[in-house]
Image (tube, rainbow, N blue to C red; front, side, top):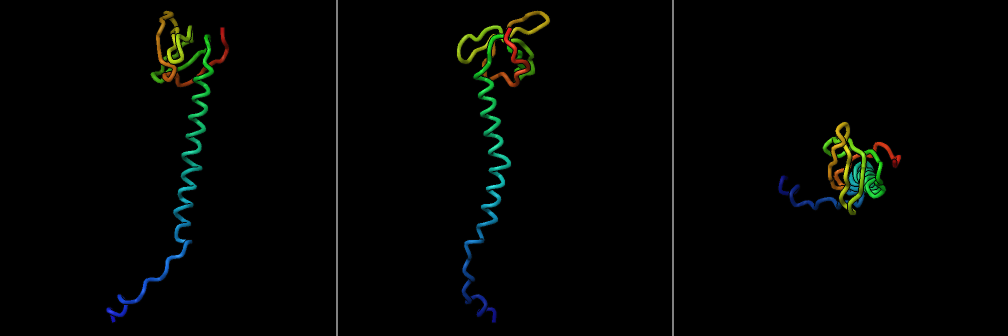
Amino acid sequence: MLVALYLQNAPASSPWGFLPILLIFAIFYFLLFLPMQRQKKAQQKMLSELENGNQVVTTGGVIGTIVSIMDDDTLVLRVKPDNVKLQVTRSAVATLLSKEPK
């Protein structure tokens, strides 16, 4: 009797078996990948629009005002209260606090 069970053909798989897997991938795309792409585009836009006088926060937590943009990748920040000037890369800017050029 067990031999007869082993010799039976397996039921044919239907194309609907892949539907749950496709749904999981669609959910991951819309909940994870799409928002990350939007956030990355917004960050790149913010970095490209930096100007002298903007107040920014770096990834290290330093709050400063952009004094000059030396080239496409380097900024000089003035940090209060001692007016210390720091040279940082553009990619080190995490947040734009104020957009008012002075």
